[in-house]
Length: 288
Image (cartoon, rainbow, N blue to C red; front, side, top):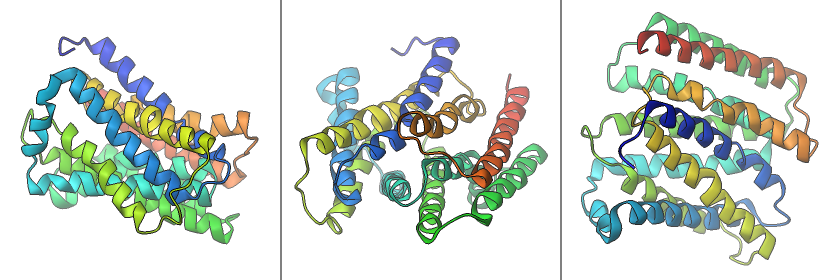
């Protein structure tokens, strides 16, 4: 498992984007379950999936990794949990296209936070990508958004900020330390947060299966594959290779649910994709 080629790492990251892109489609097929109920079961399924992977990889000793978690590393757990929650709330409140296109600015937000808190230098290429991404997001939210869409976009901004904080927190971890244990705890934290708002634990069988699929297939396998791929794929290339999520998410709901993106969402989304692709290409040139 640890003897991994670069080509296999690339395949892992691309496949992760495919799994992550299924979130909006699964949620659109939810029959009647409240968003908080879905979040509760999705979060538990996520933790179970990550723990199962750790058990298959490390055996019964995987539990020791939870004992080694530092208090500061819980930032990873809390920020990821908040990102999980606001992502689902955003999908419930606005179109999948609006949500995933704003989330695709994650690499840019992460670079900005790294500059603010870690004093990592922001290159001219990254600065240009930031401006281009912000212009795209401004077009997405400029017109054609209902009251619910505006709330969904706000949730998406909180989600992308939370995921970016998680990335910066991971950079603060000691070199070589396995951070899957704090990642697994994110599901527990998200489930606890959901319990404060959940109207009922009652859920139909179909909605339960979809919630489990969201926690295991979508975010569970998605984050595991990104972790595996990052071993041999330079960090600058990961956001570029994972763009399958941004490209496929609106496509799935358009094909299977007939949810057509608004014109301003399409135009702004093109600018966002160009920004992230440009930053990824700059990273490829710098770290071939």
